[in-house]
Image (tube, rainbow, N blue to C red):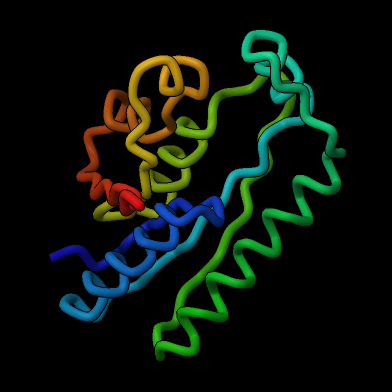
Amino acid sequence: MYERILVSIDGSNPSNRAIDEAVKLVALSHGKIRLVSVVPSLANAYAAGAYSGFVPMESQESFEKETAEILATAHAGLKQRGVDAETKMITLEAGTDEIADAVLREAQEWNADVIVLGTHGRRGINRLLLGSVAETLVRITTLPILLVKAVDK
């Protein structure tokens, strides 16, 4: 059974659904949840914007503040449900690896049994332009992964 459940979150609907699934897993195993959220490097975001046409208008500090708020909100929600969890913010440095690499490294260092994360389920040009942390993670890890798709509206 999965006792160490790492959940990668970004505040989106799919990541909130991933938290719900992690709660179900931890209820079965009486294990631990670690919520992680990765702060992108502003320099990397600008580089990605050059290819996609999207240029972020935020500062690195605003990225970090938003990520801290995402973690705090998710942690408080779990606490209300009677689930204790750890949180960790990971900040990428300019020119370093991708979000998926950082999530995998954290999972390995924490000795996670499973990684849970949401996916938007994008297809076609949107997937090509926006990329997919989930897809990259599936390719680079040998750890079990539970992908939770967004609910179609």
